[in-house]
Image (cartoon, one colour):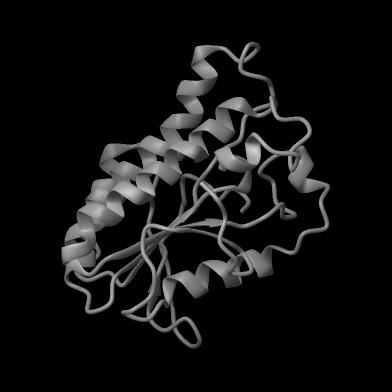
Length: 205
């Protein structure tokens, strides 16, 4: 799915269809920002890790180490930091759910098949999503006794500002959002530690 801003600049309350909703400042690369936001949540039912950046589409041999570090800081380390910070609040929920917004380009099975003819591009981004997929599995193992279900979602190419390719696409972000909502509202006998496309079909790791 498209990139959400790492930093929100204002805090509001909105009633109506959104209930009593608060917009909190949260930068997934800033430990103090994460800690502040986590302190505001006594109980949390759903955590969607959607913040992500993609880089400039280079191959692994052309991207420098700094690019990898910058992308992993948001796409991988940010997810670990945010998830761990909000786990106490999630454990207080009766039906806690975590959704990690990944990418079909992070599928190693697809990367070695015919689905992606330009397999070498966006190496930093795609490898960060492969790492996120692995984390999804490991968190599922660690949190099973807490009743916390966590899954990864491949939203498909959507018309967002993630990168130039996404911005020029015809993919409706609403479809991807519906896929995330589906995983966020899984029943207690639903899956955990799995990888799904936006339409609910399984994606190979």
